[in-house]
Length: 393
Image (tube, rainbow, N blue to C red; front, side, top):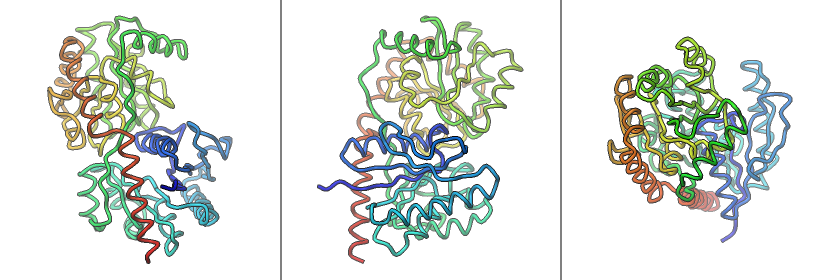
């Protein structure tokens, strides 16, 4: 079967890293591995960033996005529209992350062409795309334009339901869960090697081999509930004084979290080292993963931790319950309960037999249902079906 020529559009991309950005990066890599021609299109958030780069071997085009609020969005949208028009004869499909400004441009500029535009919704609840349409400037207009796209991908059932309730045609929404790469099982030697490599790359990540390490990876955003895990950490330290917490990522709450850690005197015990291109070594070095979010669709970070066979401690919200069953594939705690969060973390650190069983069960669930290979293949099947519909119009 012939390969597809695909443009994956995401306004935020490396080095701005969060769950949505990692989904597009991972998908682009796997689609390329499967023989398709992929390029990523994003915004040039800083003028000194190069306009073209290669990320994991995938060509990335950065379009102007001045820092002036409002004008930056307009300039980016104009640039994206011009780029899409210039590439009409070079593309088979366009896949856009988030039902926002990039989606508006792609839908409107390619309407009437033979190139299907597929929009991927992100997030649920107050932080989701459907909520954005209710609160943002011109949000209702953005939603109406997005609804004209050829197809939609919902990575979770909750996102699917929110889209349908917001007026998106059910028959045009395809439920395709997130997928992640599943590598070989981690050994004790790989854990030691990962810790040594991270310490060599950044001395603030140095820790003793026996020190318990809990990690979060993702966007540092208020919706992730990270202040709760910071406030829970002193209780963990009472039982495990050498324990360390790493909050890996970047985002709007980074300064607030750093200030809170400083105010609590936890600077050497809670580390905020910034974003990583890949979290493979971080997960290999860790003993547990924590996700205290208030809202999630289907967390790519959680799937990656599960694939790494880490015991995962997660908040009791619908997006997490899709993946984690309490005391089977992880540990679930009430979203606002700092005390139970602390006890849950202490429990998986203390009981290595439990931690191993939870991690192995989580990894098995990912292998069976959430592999990146399967997710990419499902995307391609959907893209081809929409291409055929466009051809017959």
